[in-house]
Length: 566
Ligand SMILES: Nc1ncnc2c1ncn2[C@@H]1O[C@H](COP(=O)(O)OP(=O)(O)OP(=O)(O)O)[C@@H](O)[C@H]1O
Image 1: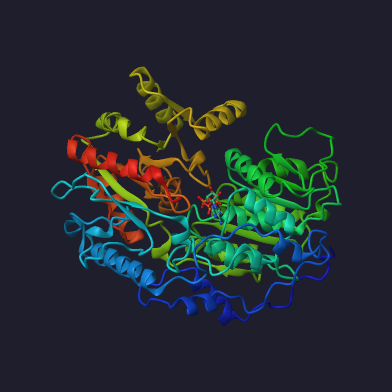
Image 2 (image 1 turned 90 degrees about the horizontal axis):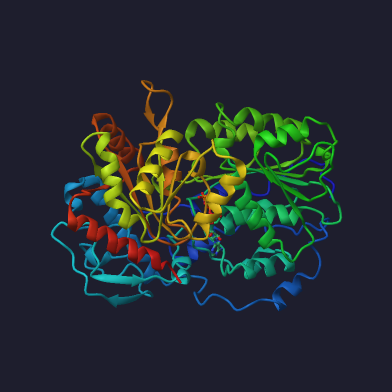
């Protein structure tokens, strides 16, 4: 495919793009009718198949004839369901404004809208209710009067959900081999970000894209499908590069690309320390790795691969990848070594304002999909805080939570590697089964530890920010912030909202529920948690690890969260 002509043509007028951006947003003021929602999210220009790519143009009709069975949800949701959910959303906001006191007895994240004041039994008329005999204690943490069985198809039919799509994958003009890949991994309908971003990504000529969508909403598949669509399988050299901030995330992305691309001839290479040999060329189509390794490879000229053939450059967790301090320098160096007409694709769940501007200069004339500030966190993640009597008693609180943490799987985030190790050792010496993971461990050990957690051998992972972003393990139903995430040095402390959002986003993935607990042990952490709540516009509920009722309620909520949508 010739990339010589850089993308000058605008695919869509600004107004249309803006409406698409708001299509990503939950509208709390008005309930959009299903028809207006679907029209606002329809791109002004249907993407043209990339005819230069051998993957395209081969019998798109074949995609249709191969079409597996469709999700039962209708493309447009019944308005009753939509208005039910909207009421619920409004109520949450009211509660947030009125403060924590009035939140007592109200639950905002577990599908138990039986507790809402408007008397709606359900937010979604299509879900099934199963009466359980659990009761709610006075001012209790979580209501279990009704255990709601949530269906993913229902969530995806709800225009207010980040998982909603008016379209099917078939409507996205993907190659038949990619459609087979999508169905083989069990995806039935695209999520909102997939539906909106893919036509923009696949348009011709290629345009840059900056895409923001909540944690766990399927950004990986969106950029994966773009990479797989754009590389030429007949050209055995890297044509797409995807960078991530950690080896763990790079490995995970490679697995997704390999799975979705399993019916193509496209091959991937993991570009992390120790995964390549000096002087040996890489003859694979897609490189997925960390910036340091790519800098190393590229600093050897064309010996390892010819950067001139690269046509797509993806940054997952882009706000971190381009942040001035840290990985940004390396990412910028890599970009400078790639052809000027490369398609830059930046995705993240967070794009703080100061980074947005830099992202726009990194990816000029990009199509942009940004969330409103209040939409950034996932509603299905129940956010709690736990008061401890000083730093020393944090460990006791954690130990008291262990039974809850091992109901499903949990990740405990600490500020330092030393704390992670100390906690892990103490819990292990008390007979608990935990693992610790951080950047001081050897690469192989890191891989084994995460694999052990991923396949359920380990239930509790004690870690640092190394796995705060991107890691996707569906059974994780609890995240503990043992230390408040912070920016900067001691004394120059500021809570790190973005890291908090990514940490809690390790649970509540793609329609699942989850629970996060942040520890508060002194005035400063109390202020920080207050600041996080203000910034996110959401109140957290307080729990007490010494209170049996609170622990019971938490346990029930975590058990319910394990079920996930079906
Ligand atoms: N269309 C779909 N249908 C069903 N499941 C999906 C679909 N798209 C993605 N998923 C699943 O959703 C989960 C979360 O996806 P993914 O890891 O891409 O989220 P993300 O948006 O990149 O999150 P984060 O911001 O935390 O990196 C994965 O397990 C993935 O397999």
